[in-house]
Image (cartoon, rainbow, N blue to C red):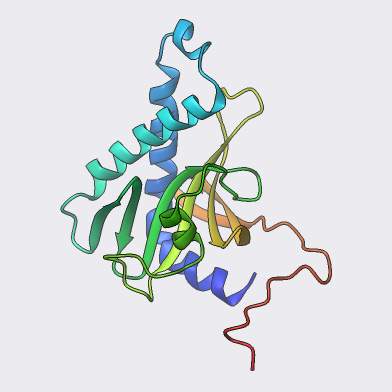
Length: 186
């Protein structure tokens, strides 16, 4: 596990049970839709519905809560936590990567670039869910750290006896394919 992953997951630790519950709540709400409607939904529609339910739950839990700010930058909904982490909520694949049309704001978020209203030192993270193959349940809840189109690292969130933990699920990189940060190189 990298130092960055350990530091970020330490900051995220108090939020993991809530994010886990938020995704399961949102998925459960979608499962209540009549099957004659969901049968007509493609994967994008399903993901949009679940994400909408998740964001509504984020607002319920964090609006007005000390240390938390709900931000809407264009179509980008973000949760700022104690000026330390900024969260997006997305459907992700097994490596923590989200896929959708990338707006300029979304690219800037993933590239860790400045955005209005966000402290530059706040780490941009994605809280996501990966559905099972059939789309009937959540296979896992994931926290990922995007850097551009790459995933720097990803962790699977586990809840056992109401205690949250995480496991590093970052896919191994082939030698020579590691990210190079030219800003930090001297």
